[in-house]
Amino acid sequence: MNAKIAPISISEPTPVPHPFWTGAFRPLFLCAGILAIVAVVWWIAGFAHGIATPSLGTPAFWHAHEMIFGFGGAAIGGFLLTAIANWTGRPPIAGRMLMALTTMWLLGRGAVGFGEMLPPVLVIIGVVAYFVFLIGLGLRELLAARTYKNIRVLAVIAVLALFDGLFTAACLDVIAVDPVMLYQTAILTIILLIALIGGRVIPAFTRNWMQRELATAPMPAMFGRFDMLCLASVAISIIAGIVDPAGTVFGAALLLAAVLHGVRLIRWRGIHSWREPIVAMLHLGYFWVPVGLALLGASVIWPDAITSRDALHGLTGGAIACMVIAIAGRAALGHTGREVRAGVLLNAAFALIWISTVFRIVAGQSDDHYITLLAIATLMWIGGWLAFLIGYGPVLIGPSQKKTRGIPVR
Image (cartoon, rainbow, N blue to C red; front, side, top):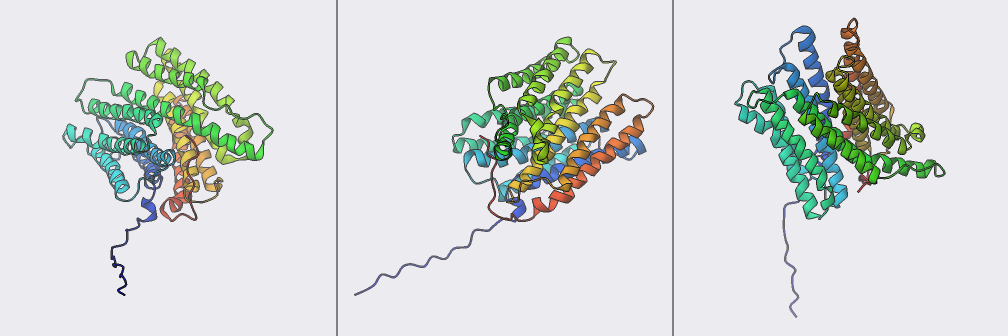
């Protein structure tokens, strides 16, 4: 009797990517931290010591672009693709696709750095390509999993990409639009994104911790109609700022939004989170959303009291940077299988950047000590990001310790 012999199949093993390329949070959060130092140190060196600085029309516009669209864009991409993997249940973007996305981000930095030497169309394409690829990857994953409700996050990022292209075109004199209005609107668009995502993750993470540690305390208010009103207030402020950047309606809309987001923050019960720094960071970071909106509103209505440039640092150095630290630190721990608990370096990084924002705002109100206070703010900013990179760079680059956990928010 003839026995069947099973055919032998020989195939090449599937290549396993280096741990650094297994999740978008790894390269993109690392890139964001490095650029946070480079874009500030280089600009300050040019401002204070006359060192040659990249220019996008002016060195100040280059600095603004890199902090808003470069730093902010990398952080947004790192969070978005990490969260989408959890929302959809699909494998995270990794390997060659992630390498390509990171390369596009780096090419964008080069395009802006040589912005005045290249044809404007190449610079604009260079800065927008990263966002287009990011949106494409996110849309592919959401459509494949039929998770349609989260497409609104991609819509906000698409608006940010639009303003990136417009701001770059305005700086290069391709279009006759005020670049200040454009980057101010882009900052508010990122704040809208923080309000949208933060409105889900902050109360969720806080509730998870309180149910373990303070089960008898009043729980945070979860996302509801009031939160939709808060989001609408920022969206209305964005529209008002585009229509009339110096108008009273814009200033009043910002002040109203500040009040609503202040109430929203209180409803999240962050007062109880002081025992757990990695939870408290989320609340302290979001604190700068109402404060920054209020400062910007005051700068519109009472321009002699505070300039919009100083007020915007409450939103950029405060809300955006502090939320990036809080989320990036949490992701670096949770998604590499480590205990989600803030260590000394993450606490130091967050505290230094938070306090740096205070000094930066106060510096603008002090003519006699402006340079001194600016120097203090800059040194604290650099120290904060160095602490983050020293503490979490090895975590982002190295292997996971055990099975990773996702972001439990839908």
